[in-house]
Image (tube, rainbow, N blue to C red; front, side):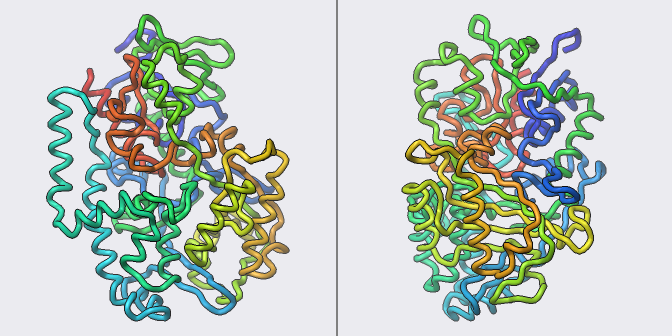
Length: 527
């Protein structure tokens, strides 16, 4: 510590990079963040996309952000305020039928009973089964996975972390195995009989997941999305006043108060390695910066496929990084609206417009969307989740107008037949608008401005390989101690003094802060 050299250079000022930087600075290290864009926040930023209209650009809703990170960084003191959605989700099925989830168990049961009395009775047991497992996995989120082939410390980690799973009863262990191994459809078929209820829960299995609900392992992605909490309420979803950028701007202020230096417009071109040790980075303008360690908040695909010279990597590690799966099939839109949409099945304004509005009426619809994307490049009828945050936050749009976030699946990371996303972007966006229009006539006419981000755009703008919002597929071969690869699950890269703090490490994607928190702890332990 001390002197002119930094103790840590952090590549990428996304929320995990900011979190890691703060914990390191609090421990007395000299830390510098290098952010390629002109603003920190990574994919969690709020930007104006049409005159007078602001919205979260990529990530768009709050639930998974760790309460410990919020408390330690005192984010509320730096202006963060998160409000609850009145209900979690609203699914329009056709011109008359819909389903609302959330508000309370009793309210959800009453909604589910419209389609199946048996499923309404089953609902508490289903929630309890997921919650038992989620509690154990929540506990693992802020723990460092063991490194396969490591020493005594890693054996202790494996034993203690496995103990939580062993404490689950036999029924819960069976459920856990089902979630890791089965498709979302097979898992939900074991619980429910109604297609509508299966669609409501199956949607979470394809969020940020370029896969069908029939893909083995897709049930785990469903579970990943119930880990969260808002203001102490487990499983709740909320909105950060001012958009997702409010989170990262609060983190920026916390970091600067702790002494972290932040450089924007500072894109890293290469990680510098000398005699088998990481010694710093080279920026795209040729500037070289040196530090005792480099911490990467970019995904494994970008880090090891572009920023690190393959000759500096162990051959088997390099081969496995080439095989690392990334690409979430996500297309992201923001639209400026002159008025609120009117859904045919529920036309008047109400709490449903402040929830997650999910257009994915059946599991078959979701499967067909994936099939279309693989064959044509994008879904003819996409899966769309629409949020209208201006119903909860009047800072985002002019009075009387609104903004909507459209998070859409399935869109191929690379289009077939040599077609480019630059050429096809607006046609795909038109398909998304038309999909919403079919359920809410007049929606298209209310759109006065829009921002369209294809998987290619998400990669170009935010460095998300294949547009992957999770920094890598959340499949069983890329989770826990195997994220990003066995032997390097404890945040240390294969080159000495190279660390990883992004969503490509445990516990994975979402705006959590957990990878940044955990990586900082391991760096501090290494001192």
